[in-house]
Length: 503
Image (cartoon, rainbow, N blue to C red; front, top):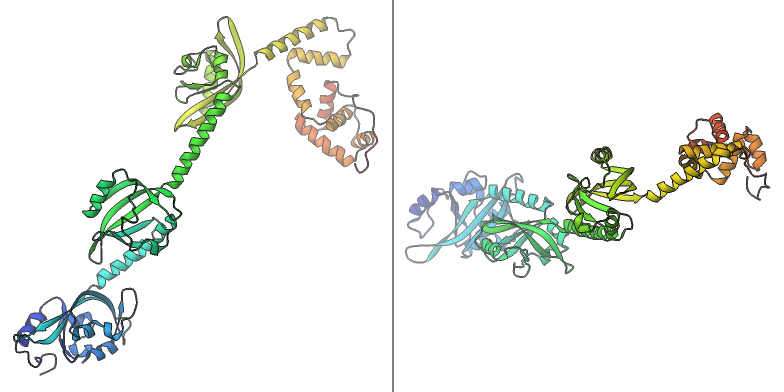
């Protein structure tokens, strides 16, 4: 009889035992007291990718030469740690997980969960030991995929074992978020490192953790390595690891949002202070209805009403956007472009008195709402002075025989209202550009102007280019006409000696 079918000496019921063991799903290897392999069922052979028990080896030592075993952390087993060696020594154990690889065929790789158990004969003496094997290769593969996904997941996460509430895994995202090293987290309990601290309903979350139930998302204050706290959203999902109930905690870092909210709050506080203290009349209103939500003291003074009579009413109802055509024009510009600049309006705010203003408006977001900030510049006195000046000019021009023609032309332009635009254009010129323009008005060429002002021709050309751009003229001829129409020719100072080192 072959060794695979012969009963071991001294065990009368081995045939019956073999019949029982041959049909079970678990792999079984029977080991004698002398560390010889007595028998193996077909399941055990299949789990080692062999066809007969003889291919497993005749002894434990030969099995070690044929198969290399490692723990799941890739640490190889020494001889005394081999499950067959342990069971042959009479040791009973359960749930040891090992990687098994054939020495002759590296492609043969299995993951076994094994347990050792002595078998006692009818007479009470231990004669045979049995190693029971379960192939968990598929489970190990999925576990490995989970390990890779868990480690690569950028979302911070930790895994807590429900049985003792200790952390058994932590991913790099969590370590980066908190500043801890892995050894500062692994093995600690939830009492030592509470990821649910500050949660809205912490007691309910702890109860769900103990009952291995899903923990819904909740905000919590997570302690970090530097001793400070970090605002997070934490959620718990029940999972199994190595057959044990665990809780997967995942986190969303809310600290950037908190910093933005804090910065926004500070910004709005500064805006509120600047708004209240500004000497410029300003009003904040809702973007959709232009209903006033806030006014400063200057705006209250402009409107001639206390703030509580302004807040809650619309700009149109209070006459703060002028007559209907002007109001529609300003509202259309704000709606189309989000802003309006220096729109000139006449406001009938006080009984029997009108106010001339320049209105500017800008859409802003305040406390999460779309608003419009409206600012007013009272130009009533300026308009009156302009009218008084025009009246004076008109009176003077009734007898202008003693004025020069250029001065008459200038006074006429003031009466027509052209002076403001021209003065702005003139103000944009530098003193030297004014000198160059005056000589261009006299009809001088660049070389003559350079001699007159003791400049280089290149410098004169540069000044001329700048003058054309500022006046909006297209060349020398138009600049000459511009200067002559405004009486600028012949107004330059006499030639001056050039300073040392200047062109």
